[in-house]
Length: 374
Image (spheres, rainbow, N blue to C red):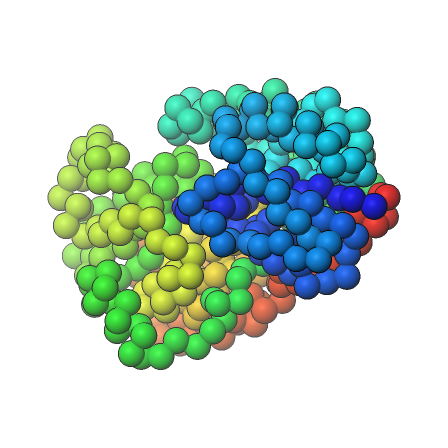
């Protein structure tokens, strides 16, 4: 029996959510008892992200555009290697596949109309491609995997998929977020990144769901109250885009309270969480939210939204806010910063909560699913 696993972006240097999910799952599968696994990925800069072993073969292809790679190259490879089952891991899949298909639909945010007019051109094109692809493959798939019960209900409702055809398999966070970090290592990171003494961490990017406009408005609220005595450290966001948004809001003066770091590799994030006063995650919409667990495992107090799948994942280990209310975000930031008892409570519970999720469990449940279908 041969199982193909689509993991096309695991070798790119700047990895994000879906890339990390399948990479960490595959690392665990590699050490488990399993049938022949053939992992299909595009060759890229990170040459050693994953290596082959017995019954576990990495097949790298030349780079190609997402639709061409998925709709032409991947089906050809499945036929060439006589694959019995394909697991497409990144929301979309080939539409003309002749073998059983498992598809992980992380979310169906792209089926919500507000996204079609928000974000970058690339993000809007991706949303259109998924709107064409997902309804087709969801009906034909042998099984759909998603990452929270919240998203399972959304998929069932929107795509009219029966309950038995959708399975929730939770994500987790990488083991290095649970590791101890010495004071010397933290100081080295602080100097290397030129981090300020007092900062809160916000993982900003251009995705509209990350809610950057309301985060900036919350800073303006704190500034007006003379309570903005920290820096907002924001990885993975460009200065030009930030200034454009600040000008639009009339808040250009806030630039002095914001530090942009550029992309930070995942293995350096634990130290950043540990050094921060708190982690801010007021997303408008999430199907899971891996940074929730990363922050908890690293010991950072967490402020996050009270919407979508976020409470399902964070449990009682967070201070919740209305993400559409900048005043509420500002109030909760102020409260967590000044209340040491609350901070300690959030940190203690958060560590226990994060430990409830593991990539080993994720990988084991995926292998069980493959065996059931075959």
